[in-house]
Amino acid sequence: MSVVANSLHPLFVGEVEDIDLRDTLGPSEVREIERRMDEKSVLVFRGQPLNQDQQIAFARNFGPLEGGFIKVNQRPSRFKYAELADISNVSLDGKVAQRDAREVVGNFANQLWHSDSSFQQPAARYSMLSAVVVPSSGGDTEFCDTRAAYDELPADLKSELEGLRAEHYALNSRFLLGDTDYSEAQRNAMPPVTWPLVRTHAGSGRKFLFIGAHAGHIEGRPVAEGRMLLAELLEHATQRQFVYRHRWQVGDLVMWDNRCVLHRGRRYDISARRELRRATTLDDAVA
Image 1 (spheres, one colour):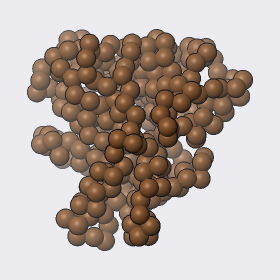
Image 2 (cartoon, helix red, strand yellow):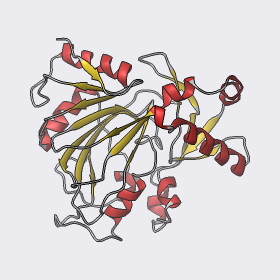
Image 3 (cartoon, one colour):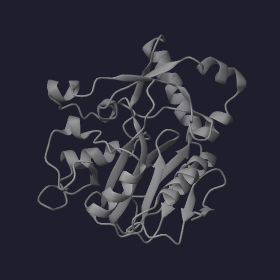
Image 4 (spheres, one colour):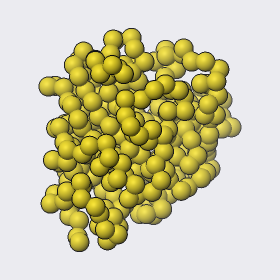
């Protein structure tokens, strides 16, 4: 089977049609999707109203699943699978959470540019986000291509970045928002890890920037200097020519490669219900 991905952006992102993700995928179909992911980095599948079982089954085609931030959260989930991340503003009782609830704070952290689980080794490879309920306006998700962003860096900056490593920490994005009410056990549940600022994609051979809100420090640089370099790189990578904005419809599934794509949610009325479910596979690379 040939998987056709119609371009949604000049640099990356493709929309795949004529496939039902509720069906069991054969090995050739899985390879075709992986091949398209190496090329496009983000794939959009419309009209895929997956339940939890179907989403997990689809995700497992692409490797072992990870729980990511669940180690820090240390709280019950609304889902039957621990590997499904609840990207919503809904509390355990099924109601829209209060503005100061931890679920809502998580929504604000998701509005920072980040790569899922960059704070662990191995980190995430593919994320698959399914839209269950979407607000009438806002709540879009943006993606940026850090391969193309690296390509457009000046040569002297590329040379400077070679060999530099950034420290990624699970709570860094939360601390940026003043969300510091975590126990010592939660703070230590996932110790910081370091990754090269510039990595090479195993599938495409292209270099990419590995940055985002979980990165808070560059090894061997004064903190202020390192943070300004990280800020400069993020500002460069998220210029509009490198960004695709996805406007959600119920039943959408968007799959992206966390190695070379950053993403962020966009603002919406936090009192309006928004429910998405994410399954994420582990990468096999270690730094």
